Structure formats: C-alpha cells, structure tokens
Length: 72
Image (spheres, rainbow, N blue to C red):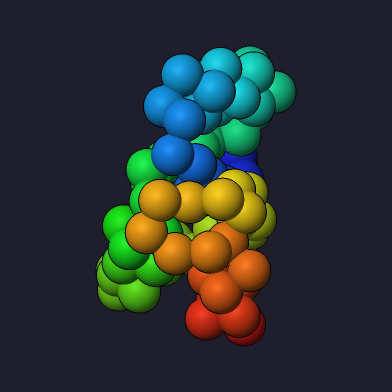
C-alpha cells in the first residue's frame, strides 16, 4: 500500500516535479496550491489522512508556520 502525502505549495511547477519524483518512489501525492485549500483537504472526512504534509513556508494566503500550528 502506498503512503499518501499532501503537498501545500504555491509553485505549481515545483509541486509537479516533486510529486512526479515521489510518485516514482511509490508515494501518492495530493497537491494544494495554498494554505486554505491545504487545510480544507486535511479537514475533509472520508478521505485517508496523509502520512506526511510537505509544507511551503511562504504561501500567498497564510504563513506556513501558521498552517503548521493549525494542523497541530
């Protein structure tokens, strides 16, 4: 079974490259382009909780450290 990862990253090109690389290693990567969508993805019920969140610290709508605080 593959581990599910959530990447919260506003640079879509970078997110695609990292997701492709991790996918080749057997990971399933979901991408959220900003903090709002990333937090919403984490709050959705009925979906598997990610084993890891890859978090950009400089997001357009919320500081990455604040996102981390909210996740905790």
